[in-house]
Length: 87
Image (cartoon, rainbow, N blue to C red; front, side, top):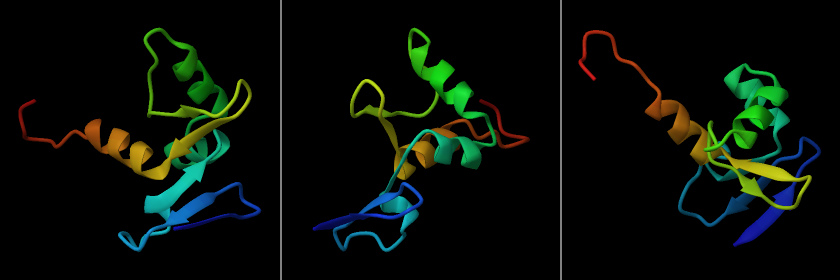
């Protein structure tokens, strides 16, 4: 298994089981905020809520929080509404 980081603050772990770059990515707060089309402060507010809201996150330290692309995608899919289907 190898890990590397790029200038865009993305850390990717390749284990051969998934070929998608995003499927293996870890992102700082600003990256999923852009993807979700919300301000980074929204993600910070969701994390501070009790109980926490928003996509799952990992607190690396007091100042560093990371989001797994898989977790963000799964959280987003869990909020999906299909018209015509009952909840």
